[in-house]
Amino acid sequence: MFRRYILIAIILFPAMLSAAKKAVPAWITSHPVSNEYYSGVGHAFKSDNKELYKSDARKDALNNLASEISVQIFSSEEFISVVRNDKMKQEFTSLIQSRVKTDLEGYEFVEEYEDRKEYWVLYRLSKTLYRENELKKMTDAVTNARSCYMIALAAEMKPDYKTAILQYAKSLDCVKKYINEYIEVEVDGVKENLINKSFRNISSLISGLTIRPAFPQIQVKQSEEVSADKLTFYLYSKDNKVVSGFPMIADYTERSIPDYSKLTGTKGEVMFTIPGVRSTKSQEVFKVSLDLNAILLESATDYLVRKAILDNNIQHAEVLIDIVKPTIGIKVKSRYADKTLDDNSVLNTFQSQLLQAGYQLSDQPDIFGEINIQTSFLTNNNGIIQTQLVGNMVFKHKNGKVIYSTAINPVKGTQLTIEKSVLDALKIFSSQIELKYCRELIEKIIK
Image (cartoon, rainbow, N blue to C red; front, side):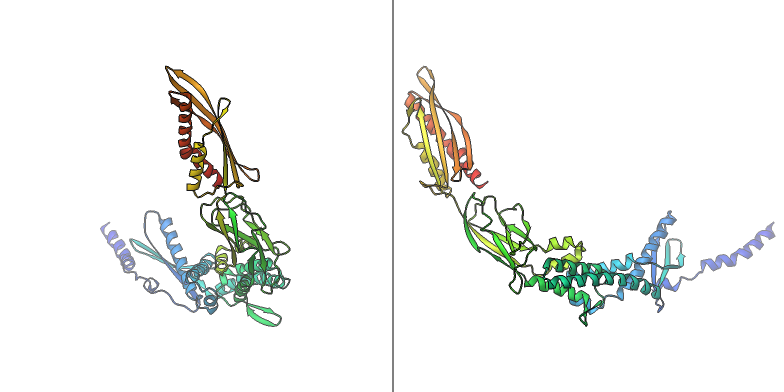
């Protein structure tokens, strides 16, 4: 039995010694370099979950393989000449790198190595196979891009500027992952770079369009609508011809407006309205721009392609809106029982508050208000007389629109005589005008 153990030990010892002394592969310490293959080395720390750490190492290897390919595709001058914004260059670079990672196919397992704590794996991809696969994908993309490019050229000749920009954008979108490559297109016997030409044609179309307002500066009154005839804009091409069917977008500095995006009409016109000017400022700005984003969204182009196109200087035009406050007139009817009271305290208080707020008074005002007050006897308690003031007020614009309407909250006056009690009620009501009613009226005017 003892001899048998010795014999087994003699047989196994060389194998154990060989395993213990197994050399670390060269591809772990020095990345493989080959004319025939791209290589990727992956690494992971070992754990109880063998399947997981091997999967992590495999992913690491494929990322490493893809990065080796990426190093060889970022030297094109076309890429540099088209995308001048450094941040955008980085984003396009990431896009191209993602193409390499997501389009990897045909790679093969070569070898693995492990020790007690770590695991390594080596994958490779035939450079010839990769080029063949990429060439087929790129050929399909270029075919679609050329088709869109030719449609864009035809639209530009009509001229149909919206369709031209849309199709140029689609052309770029087709080859967005190959934007660093030289893609040739031939037009009338002239060979051109499709990517550069598409970008430049879009820039030329955009810069050649001009927006002109019917009125560069207008004056409006607070709370009034700004009609479409005052906010009319016209779009012209570089040869001074009207451009129809082009999307335009409006921006009003005070707030957003309804129907802010429209197409130009047959005369190149686009018209907007502001339902009511609410601003307390003396001036606001109404700006209209080319709505390129609407065209690009319609073309379903990639976000990064849209961003590169929108990096162009977008044409716009402005209308300065000078804002003046409306004039106001007030009439007060005050009665006790059946008698008209000759007291101007309510009128004077209201007018004073409006003047302090910057409003002008007028006999022919933009806004006219009627205040009806009725005061009546309430009680006599051992010579202490109490009266009650009620009523309502209505302010209307000269066009008939009600600006502000409210019932007067009952006010009680208390004094030793009826006359003094009525005056006390009017005095209390006047203080409420300062604290409540005038403030509410102004809020309604600018609402």
